[in-house]
Image (cartoon, rainbow, N blue to C red; front, top):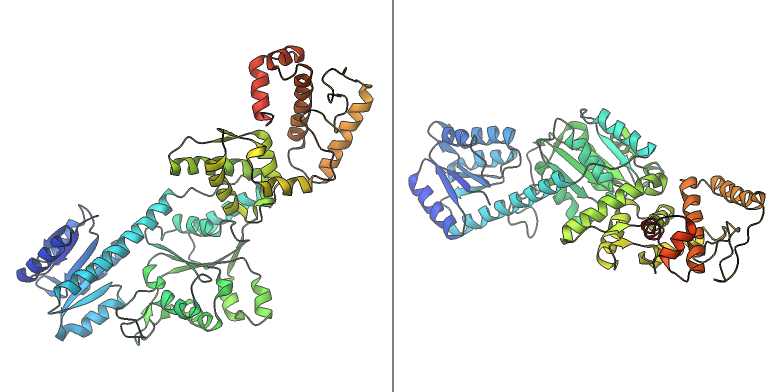
Length: 491
């Protein structure tokens, strides 16, 4: 944790707070005037800044304004005498975390500073997670369209509405818009409006004054204040209660809002990005969403495709999630066989990218070998894919119904080879069926099934002896071992 900075021209105040904070395990650096504090920012940044409101050579209000411009996420606590209480309250409108009235109870002062430290650490952890979060991955044309839209929108201040199914990555898009915008130096604050109880959401968004309601013992900064100078991401905006939609509309319209229980308007300098999985036009028709708010949010709409619409991205996403899961668990990253990957590419993933990420975490823990085979996949994935493939003839490990020029159900049987026209015509029929269904990578799919059938036939003839099977097929023993692994044929 970084040190606490304390600025006050009164040496006795500095001494008392220094000792109390050091006793609580906090490192403290003291200053006697704002000028020295501003110079110290060239060397580093504190965890929390505590400043007196009136000092020779400057005052805490001016210092707060300068710090908010260069370090918008730094919690600042203003100390004030009772006679300057109005000034202290005014400083809160400028973004101060809270204020201390002199004379103050030392224990309560330490408690307030600890709360400021906790919030600062939470925001740092969120920033680290943001910085470590990968860029959006996607090779599919639909995702390339999203990337181009992000590039065009990033430098704009316009409100963006992101639509897409749950788990499709809407927050990642919002973070990308923030990261590549002029506001990237400011905070990115996200809130899921559907996850917070209705009676708490207003306070969560706009904050509340001390004593605004039962239990409001301290002033609380809302998400709009926390996002000052940056971006506020409102997820699942379609679930916001109607009465709060009215308040949000006012902020978007004139840029001002009030804390719960407050009487002074606060100016907002925040870019709002909203997201929903719902059909907002339908909710407007049903009277569940304000039409004027919908038009205010729907300046630019960005649709994020579902994962089933970009199955070509499943392979790079699976590799990425397996590597990340292994890193988090401190184990070697698992690989996935071509056949298991093909099954994943045929799975519809109703939970989208989030479901694939969870699946990769499960496989990292549960798959017994380093290479993930079809048998290692969850039963619901295998069952779903099998049911979709039911109209297609199945390919077994010991025989091929789709490519019938090999009969290997009896290890001692002789290969039956009809005329080239027979089996080639059959392969052509299977290919036409796959193409009509819109299956991706038809050539790769059929090649794998062909190789699997041929190798299965050879292994059946040699009673599973791989070296002998490789000799019969005219390939090397390393090749047949690699093919068996890639095709998911290992027992």
